[in-house]
Length: 345
Image (cartoon, rainbow, N blue to C red; front, side, top):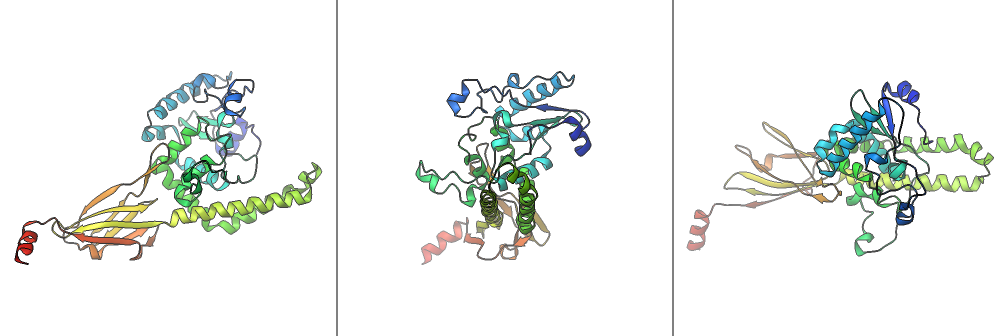
């Protein structure tokens, strides 16, 4: 997909009648090229004064909106940042970027933000210049041996391109992904992609076939095209496998207090877990993420009233968790009876 996008296309395809296209200055002569080993990145990539000028009468308002968005980003309050983006769109956008493992087009002056003046939202433009990006397997520290496992699924795409991973404007996407509202939508789309894997792979193969004559005419060898296709499909399968494991993982750990009739537990899952009982049907948050995509846990306390913890059913993404996935021990905070029993025995 080419970098240039026309407003007429946005109007025809998406119904956006009043738009501005924001991008950082593509000044490849700046000093940052030597400091970051990339002509695309700059220390000013989140500064509104570094955006390209445009004579369109509405463009100045889009720049002011961008300035306001970055100010919220600096507060690291993702809930406020959501006011500047269409969260349904961002969920789909981040699902696609993850299975292609690509942030190059989201970094530095490569990023194109479409601003819709009608609803006050930004829409990053998705595009592809290459196939699926492979993992950067260099090991600089012990933890690098494990960074491409499914628990790190959310951060993998930000780590795979050494020339792009330090781009300042990637902070926008990390903070959006850290928000439950965006990530849960992303996960639903991702789950659909995992389920429809065979159809997706066939579409990728069809794209290669449709463009093979063009590549051959441009002096690409048939063998090189076949190798590129084979590797792209292989890596996409690997990323979909990781996504599947990430989505499927779910465990519950807890303690049931017999004295208080209270269940204290943690949902060790990347999506919410629903707890179901008689007159009870409630969702409980799983693992959360900060703005750097480091995970943290949320702990819950559920008074059971007339219910027994043994009657509860735990559901994750539509599937009931097995006994091996729900591990609850017994405790009692009652002390008087306990001390009496100890004295007698």
